[in-house]
Image (cartoon, rainbow, N blue to C red; front, side):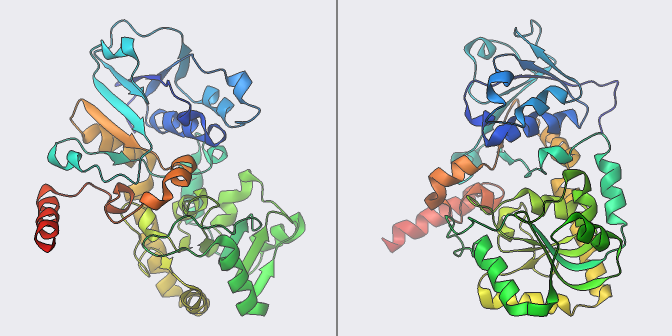
Length: 380
């Protein structure tokens, strides 16, 4: 955490509407990740929170961010201030800033030309759900990592309507409905459903259950204040893909408390998760069944070793403080931050390939690019 005496400053002005999508989550997360690291933020007051909150219920959370104030003018002296924006404001373009950070969303681009420059786009780590953040987050995570586990495999979430699949790279993804249906059909008596508060309380305080526990949000929804605690009670968490794109908040939340993700999109995290090291990965239904049966029979020592690597991965790659530190180490005056969003994936799903920065993590090295060009020319 940055010391209070330093008090780094950010002036944020957003011109386009993309940052306001996903019920206000994107704006909240963009600003909150800096606030968590001691930044003082001035947000230009061109956003009508009252008008937007009906369709974007998380937009009002922005007003509760520590060290954030709303302003109606651009600062006079900006040499010690970072400018955070989506599309550059004309007046701001004339100012001299300590650093300029542009938020963009094109995560399927290769950023070909950036491989020839010093500046590298940085993919922002996918966030937890906005309601889980708070001043005591770190203490809650530490408590979760030390919890006594009472479940072997756990899933909680919506199960209806997740029947579409837009992503086909590197392989077509099983949908959430296919994954949940396959598991419940195959493991039979090894599945337990939690349907009310009483059974949820028994689950939290009970003896170890070496089975697959399901909470369908249609039947019962775990309150956000109990979510991390419940996650931390399980050895593994099933992380099926979302409706529009694979990435979901739950994989980040699970890893934050040392719960091992069972996942079919490990390449969407940067760096990619590694099967049987910091995740359990699968592609098709047969592999999913094999992996679930393997998990149900794993030894405690093996699970504990994987858990430690999951926590290590989170601390090194997903922790907000680590992300901001990486950004601060970038000495270039101009930086690009890329956000993973439903809207971009929905419109551009066919563009995803092995050169996309979300898969590569960093743009291709010029030598690699030139080798590919030469191969293409000679083969033609």
